[in-house]
Image (tube, rainbow, N blue to C red; front, top):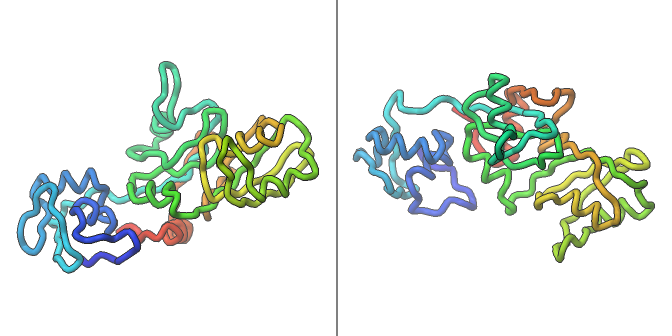
Length: 246
């Protein structure tokens, strides 16, 4: 196997990272394969911590590859926590398990009081590519506000808003009603939309994410999940700069 060079490829590279970037497995699962002696580099059994050069021959023993990657579009309901639930709270993984979606994790976050689209997967490569600020991947949200939107609202939001000393990146805003709008962002600061609206002397009452890149929420009911497959998956991974799963 020869790695496909990207701007992030720096050799020598840790073997677990190499296997993850090749789409063979996650880094954690790669360490398990290496510990079990199932990975060879240039004909020699690799050990934990092994680093490889781009020209090295890396082989994974037949039958050692973990289960195939899975990708789901999930509609997070209001009140469900993305990560680290406290007593009495339900998190995304628990909610997904109860609906038969197993062995996946949520990529990114949505506020407890927000709803909408999240990506669930067991492909660790997606996390870095989708959340790393060096990559620009657009996400679209539907928003309702407490007060009527001012005439200058669209222009001010699109031009960048000062939220506690940080000027937000340019975005796209489309008014959908006197107290509602859609916004497309290429960044994801904590509580960003709520803070932007608050900086313009208004308040968000409802916030729903309806799109992540080419993946759309559409009519998916709160709490439900659907597989991302076929052309939709191929386009999603291509936009992330990742190879399709084997």
